[in-house]
View 1 (cartoon, protein in one colour):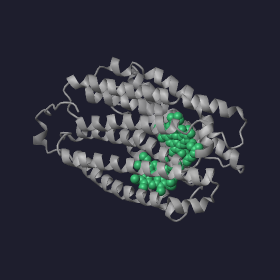
View 2 (cartoon, helix red, strand yellow):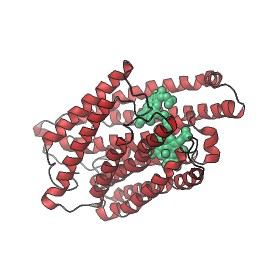
View 3 (cartoon, helix red, strand yellow):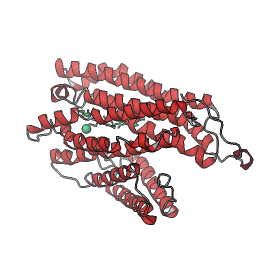
View 4 (cartoon, protein in one colour):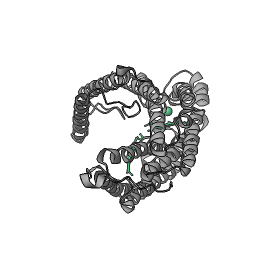
Length: 383
Ligand code: HEM
Ligand code: HEM
Ligand SMILES: [Fe+2]
């Protein structure tokens, strides 16, 4: 945000304070789970007190970025406006996960506002703005090219994403019209995702003629755009129509989609941002130890795809045995065992990848000795 507006962040102290309380809350929550300290809702497991700390952190964050935006009367760019909109929506949606309603269907109804309107609404806006920022930053392609469609994408994400929430209302006792509305609007959700992919590819191709210094950041960004499209667009679309979801709902196919989409849209984007920002802070050349960066990239992506495919196959077998043949849930689980073992292997490889990635990122983050900073980074051709 500060970089986009070419200014300093409003308060570094507030930002640090926010980092610490979020980190403390996060670590406490995870350690707490080990001792069964949990709210009990999938995805919203944190106990109320931790949720309140997260709300406070979100308020501090919104205040800090709003002040950064609005003091000194900077001109708002499309990118910052989208980012701010996404952040506000993200924070407001979180509030719907806090109260507990005794009726499970009603609880699930609100619960989907958090999950669905996050991943298919607010986070998509945040992702669109961060991708735009990184593309401008990393490729040197003009702002006009990159930002051209941003508002159209935002409008489409909101239009399809908000009513598309209906694809989670099919089987929880909501009125029948959700079958139609959920189907039509959620089926249109991949359209803005495809637009984002087209955008990213077009800008990356344009950038081939420009001097690129940070190929790593770009590689992660491009991979993120593609896997976002596959995981969310293709895997999501594949199970969103009620005629199909009737069979696949809540199976390993869902888990396959969840992992694929999260990894592509948000996991890899976060990593791309780290590769984009760290060299700038530390003054290190981003393309130093290519072999290590390449190993991290390959092992993480290979194992993730490996796991996603194992879950997909497990899911298809599960649908067939459980829903078509009518076999008992637990009996089916025993037939899926082999695919869970494959997943375990993929998970171990993923852990190795995480280690390599951390090593590479810490290497990039280590401050460059002053003498070495002087020389300009040597441009290398784009991917
Ligand atoms: C980056 C965007 C997305 C992310 C991160 C994401 C993630 C997830 C996750 C984690 C779940 C599982 C929730 C649970 O535990 O039940 C889920 C469910 C689902 N998603 Fe997505 N999703 C995304 C986009 C999409 C899109 C664009 C579509 C449709 C075109 C879609 C269709 C579905 C459907 C139909 C389900 C419910 C599956 C079931 O009935 O079990 N998703 N998504
Ligand atoms: C290869 C490494 C990974 C392994 C072995 C793994 C394993 C698991 C397991 C055992 C579950 C719970 C049970 C289930 O839904 O089947 C789960 C759920 C989940 N994980 Fe992972 N995970 C991995 C990486 C990731 C990453 C990198 C992300 C996010 C970027 C992620 C996001 C999720 C989500 C959103 C769920 C809930 C899915 C749902 O309810 O459908 N996981 N994962
Ligand atoms: Fe959804």
